Length: 284
Image 1 (cartoon, helix red, strand yellow):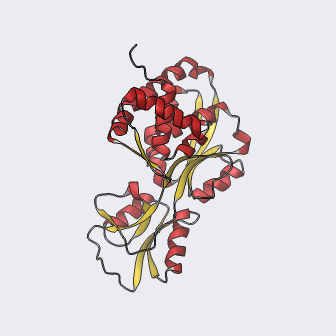
Image 2: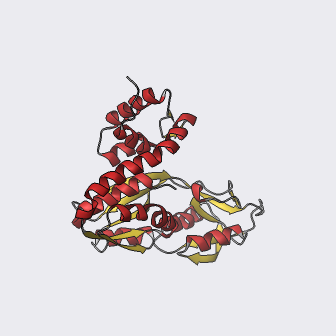
Image 3: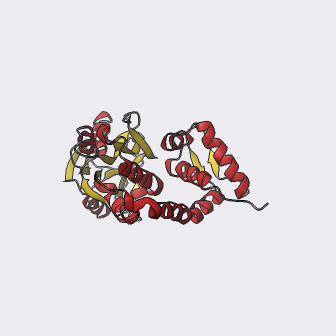
């Protein structure tokens, strides 16, 4: 009998690849870590080799795993789209969604159109704000759900982790290696966890700084860094070719990007489907 790709195994594989941890994937899919391991082992038999290199902290895709991830992304999307087309017109609702600015373009461009096409009778209302502000608005019921970033260990009870990230200090590629007395900073708006982390870690290390730019716009902060006017803290995956990592500054703590639902919308079917779409397609 020829090998068959089980869609449930593919979904588990994508969840592990996206989150970088078996435990996080288990939480997302509401399965035990043991079940996740069994799924990956079964898929590795079909694929003909190891899909992940593993250590005590995280997992990384092998060359075979990367190839399988690329080749099955459209398969998983097509599977879910077909099911959505069968049932989508019957689902009606309204979702108020929050997204931090640094992830807004990706979610709005790459994820929401897929959801909107599958569930045309669900109305989306999107708001961008900093992560702590979004968390407060979800907790108050002003938003049904939000993508947000929080330091490791501050995960909300109703949150599902999308991916773990360790932010890095970055400067323009041509920025001088030797530091002057005062560091020029491009900082995020108030209520952003990276802003707090930047200032607190520099203060603890005895650095002095001046603020060149304070902005809620990740695009403005990126431009300020690339131009050589300032340094900042950002996700490693958001770095551009015009930037370099600043090794001389304090190491940043690990954070988690997560999807948080409000207590009032815990059993909302439309929100559950949107959360599923975000879990499946979110990338740093």
